[in-house]
Length: 81
Image (cartoon, rainbow, N blue to C red; front, side, top):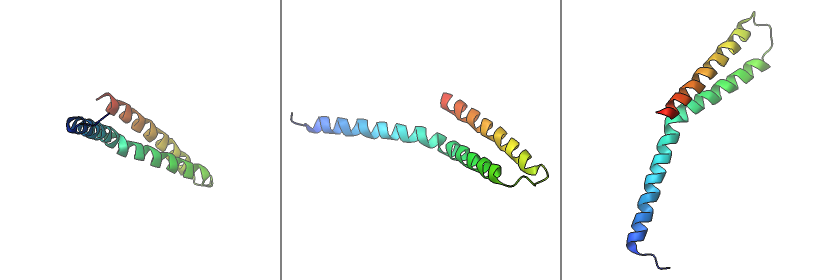
């Protein structure tokens, strides 16, 4: 099958628009996804730390768990809009 210039232009246009749309979707959640990853890594580090912190390590883990839930909810809301 011979490719005509119009088909080539149409294909490239569709590919470009599709790529732009996908990039926009991922970009909007990229920072939230990165924050979620960092919070999970911080929680992991705190869980590996020694327990002799006067309750502050435990409280930090609790607050990080709350932050993780907030970020997850934010991502869900962002996906709706």
